[in-house]
Amino acid sequence: MNQTAVRSITIVGGGSSGWMTALYLNKLYNHQQSQVAIRLIESKDVGILGVGEATVHSIRFFFAAMGLDEAELLRETNATLKTGILFNNWMQPENGVMHQYFHPFEHQPLGNILDISTSWILRSRHLFERYDQGVSLSAALMAHNHCPKMPDSRPYEGITPYGYHLDASAMARFLRRKAVQAGVKHIEALVQEVVVEGGNIHSVMTDKGEFSSDIFIDCSGFKGLLIEPLKADNWQSFQHQLPCDKAVAMQVAYRDQQTPRSYTTATALSHGWAWEIDLTSRRGSGYVYDSRYIDKAQAEQELREHLGDDVEVLKTLHLDMKVGCRKEFWLGNCIAIGLSGGFIEPLESTGLHLINVGAKLLSTHINSRDISQATRDSYNRLMNGVYDDLKRFIVLHYCLSDRDDSQFWRNAQRSVDYCPQLSQQLQTWQHKTCEFMDLAGGYATTFTDENYRFILYGMGHYPSLHMPFDQASCDQIFDRLQSMSQRALQVSMPHERFLASIHPEKQCITGA
Image 1 (tube, helix red, strand yellow):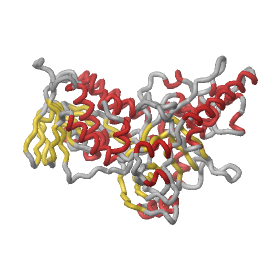
Image 2 (cartoon, one colour):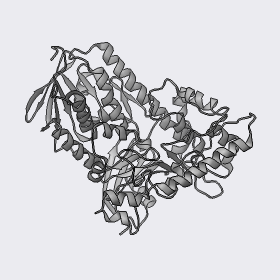
Image 3 (cartoon, rainbow, N blue to C red):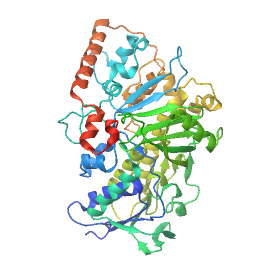
Image 4 (tube, helix red, strand yellow):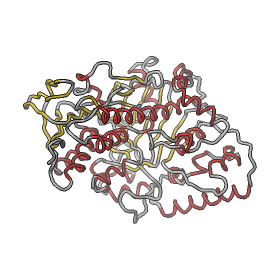
């Protein structure tokens, strides 16, 4: 081996971030023969939050690249499929009807002279249908609780992109088993001291001994056990843009005849929003809120009222959220990934995506034991860009709201004041469709112009367009989409049936 090549990597912290990173780096460096010693140190006394995870669709590519069997992954993590997010109550009711829109992972690129989005605006189709219903197949799947799988779909493939609802604790255990089988060394130990020399971590002292390494990766969560000792004042808060700082999470039992939904729901409440994520074994729910306006007891009571008086609560957990990210994710020979590097509130299910991005960028940046500052600067610039882009996308959901029933929602409309770039874009999008070039050069490639349009038009932020168009040509686009939607429902599987084929032992799938 080259004398300057990395010989050892130590990851501190398990959970999703630790084991995803371990699995990825082991696959990268040791896929043919063992060249880099990779160990993961975690304490069994430090529990995984495990409140349940929804994902973006691109996480499928990570699991596939790791060689994981999709059916086994679904079984081991009590998983269901996710076609997108159904947003409820984010705008004021109209004519007594609750506001609702759907953000799927897919947008049909139909149209000849005019694209489908511009055609939808010009034909004023908002008068009788939601934007997602007019431009995607997933809206029809969601409405009928179908999933994107056909009976003969190959692993990680469907007629539309999809993500997952996973049990986070079960996933960590599953990934740990796969990583250890692949050669990652697992050490259960409690970190007692981090030894720093010359801006680098020399070793970590644990109750099981001292461990040295070329590279250290901090996956210890908000505590930042490794990254914190390296530099003070290394955190940038997103509190002004995204003020929700607490969450109460509940695991609840299914009622009789309930079956898992193929989508996440995000319902706006008085001082934040509530998620509902359906697993095969239970339903995960929670309330993300701004603690300046309600306390823990009030938030828990409001969530219970939202879920219904007859709901059976299995477990309740109160969480503190540290929304923001590191100024420098990479210091010396230490890289922070996952919650130790940063956190964007979970509105668009970006937690696992950010772990995936952080780990993958290491593959192009860890090129030596003697890392140049230019390499660290590159990684830090890219990760900061990713977090900044995602922050603006989340702010978009809040600042477009017209709700004025609480101080939280009145303040939410002004959150864009802290995002000058987004403010300028919103002014532009009053007069033109949001298109690829408006966001070109960004970092968060998971959310593109297609995703922005679902939020913009789902919340009634339509551009004023005055241009000639042929009505018949436009209508042909939507006739074609309707035909495609009907065909998608014919060939796709009901979510319940697909899950029964994966989890034949799960009673909740059949509503029993």
